[in-house]
Image (tube, rainbow, N blue to C red):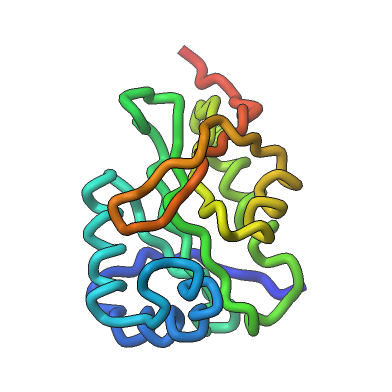
Length: 167
């Protein structure tokens, strides 16, 4: 299995991020904007900041293979709740199960920080993604609802095995 590295990425990485988004247009085709653009990438970076998130690049052997946009705490005003806004892995990424490994490692780090609940959203027209999240213990917690970008999603969440910080 290839080791991966998470690195914070931002506008200075726009060219590399845009190339990754173009490699993920099968996923983007499920939404209202099927083609990757600089505007799309910049909007995702801005939204991450708006939600106090950190936008990570997922690298294997120096190559950007995916992104993880994570609000590590404070989601919906709850310090013990994290939100995964985006976990996107290119289909041609080396190594099997990269998304599962990134998610498991992220869950472990969040639990060590005292996070008790991890939330995310999934497009209703992406059954493969819904199966992925459910296979990792996430449950649907809402009816479908329309997002500002025109997609329809359901909310999902998982109770994390949080490790309480010593007082």
